[in-house]
Image 1 (spheres, helix red, strand yellow):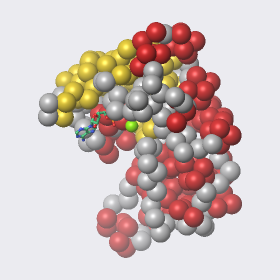
Image 2 (spheres, helix red, strand yellow):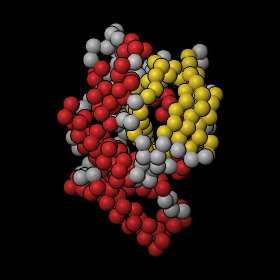
Image 3 (cartoon, protein in one colour):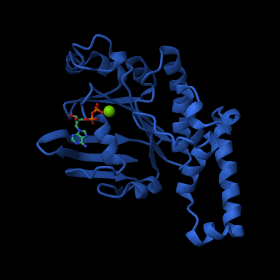
Image 4 (cartoon, helix red, strand yellow):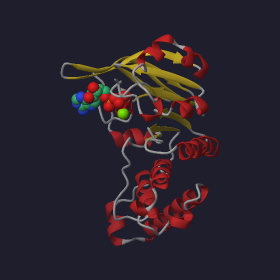
Length: 260
Ligand SMILES: Nc1ncnc2c1ncn2[C@@H]1O[C@H](COP(=O)(O)OP(=O)(O)O)[C@@H](O)[C@H]1O
Ligand SMILES: [Mg+2]
């Protein structure tokens, strides 16, 4: 479904990602790991069109994506969440999801200004869809609450639900368990496998909690200083010498791989 071919991103003299090639198949959960500064978020930024790669190709369902605008890429079926939660402040939980539903089905300006019947009908359908999504993930009871009043773990879920509202085939999650305690991260991982089955999506997951990634990913890619140092099944990655070395000096990998 997704394939990148030798994707490279340079910022001035710094090569953040070098010759990165990955495949993600339908309904697969794939992990992208590596110490801080390894280039993981940069990979997401290239796939979602926030950065145009310096070199290489990104192919999604047969379409070349590199250099396309983020909204076009969303429309192709790729959605993401961010390393730092980005919810709309001052909007309710339901409205946060609704905004994303409207990204998919955008009414014409004329229609929306005059609240024509077609617009009202679509708006109602969008509300229903947003509410159903919240129900599906157990957040319906918070629909009217201010999004940022939710506890942290629920805000993370809401961000994921909002991404799902754009009806992606591929969901990119950037450190969704950051800042969570072990129990919360375990719950989140169950949640991710649940939504994979329920919505038939593939997931590409950046995560520092090793337990977490090893537990749910079918395959992993490991980046270090922008270079892919290993790829394969979790059991092979765990034993890989280069991977162990890259994480050396990291006392507790669950706290995020800051180099000593
Ligand atoms: N917009 C940018 N401009 C300059 N340097 C950047 C930019 N984005 C990321 N970098 C650099 O690229 C490297 C990889 O960053 P990042 O992809 O955020 O790493 P990770 O997500 O693995 O922690 C870092 O050295 C970072 O400082
Ligand atoms: Mg990052």
